[in-house]
Amino acid sequence: MRRVIGLIALVFMCASAAWAESPPNVNGQWRQDDEGPNIILMAQDHDAVLVIFDGATPQGEKITYYGSGTISGRKVVYNYIFTRSPRGWDNGDMTLLLSKDGQTMEGQWVAGWGRGKVIFRRLK
Image 1 (cartoon, rainbow, N blue to C red):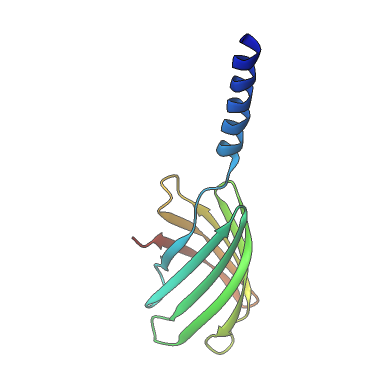
Image 2 (image 1 turned 45 degrees about the horizontal axis):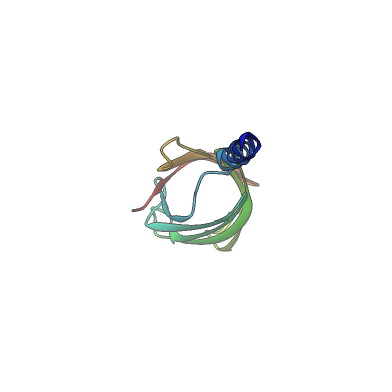
């Protein structure tokens, strides 16, 4: 009986460690604060993430991109490719840090023409 209880405890400890190491959930709809009207869709599979952005600049210029990347801890990193963008905008990379409550991501984009800060907020 002691061996059975010990085995159950060992299985429970291993399962708890695996659950604790799983990445946070970024699935869902997000919005970027500093752009015009927009929606960001994120789909996560373990530590991989797919992203689709559709919106506009504050001046009304259309923006659409898609991207893919990884999640490590609370850090989300992906590269993106524009399918619609203002003239002169280049594809780039996004690095975000998910807040502890899982409701915001803050970070930076980097592209051939510059870099800047971004804030994504989860939509309910």
